Length: 245
Image 1 (spheres, one colour):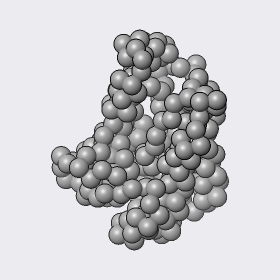
Image 2 (cartoon, rainbow, N blue to C red):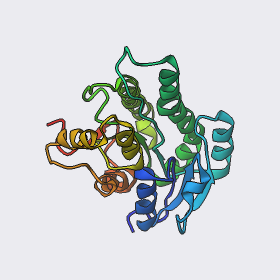
Image 3 (cartoon, one colour):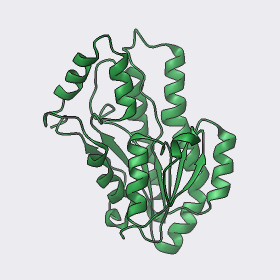
């Protein structure tokens, strides 16, 4: 049990990487607090504490932080993908991307950080994991202006938190997946003019020749939220099937 005795909060735990990560963390012995904007998606997460949380709602963040107490780990998984180049980008999509991908992450982390600092003072370490992407400051992708810009901001936020609190036992890292087969991706494929071609295009950009599964991503999540990564902080960790070789 690599996470026995640890309490970890996961956002966007209703589906995709968030749900798979919550299950993997609980399997390794963590007390998992699984949250999602849609509480109905949290059904079936046996042995976990579940709660509705809209991470764009500052009041809900404050209430959640007060309820969960001192955390050993936080996985900021919630986010969105806006499609389009700069010329296609609407102010609404830009604002929504910044609000969900960056501002919400900052607010939730800020709200739970005092308790994490207290916990780190007791145990020696606590870990924050932020969902970024290979589409970020790592690499640019077509039609991902808002997404790439906000995920690059996540990496900057991650490094800033890591630098500020490294001496107080807080580790902060960013997870940068490649193209993962999730409900979100399937929705984007279905919305394409030619869904079959869109799927082939997503697969083709992975040198390994396939989409990632959530099971390809969760081992890195467990590692970065466990004490096995106790000497790792401020890093953007790629799990991308070789895209950025």
